[in-house]
Image (cartoon, rainbow, N blue to C red; front, top):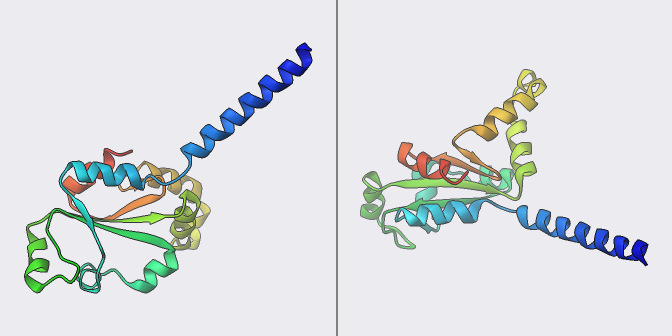
Length: 155
């Protein structure tokens, strides 16, 4: 009887650990978005005009297989006018690329390294993960120091 009880308790503990592990996996995007919303940012659709203004190319996004999030304090309509785009000069904004998982971000990062750098990839990746612009599977690709501070605070 004690043996069966021990097996059941062990199995339940294993299931609990697996569930906790699954819940811990996922994207850091939710906490990043929440932190920016607390600072009066909101996410807007990355329109063709915004892509052009910020140098975001569709082929780069497709190649990276990432979701691009554009956050701003400016009010921008779905089809922004030139004056709305000009308002970005005084507004705060951020562009965050969200990869499916850390492995996908790591894979994309490694592809851009030289042969020499790839040999030192483990060391470089550790520094990259500790930087202010990377949070798990998300990377801040555009924003000023205030934006970096918000992003950094989500780590």
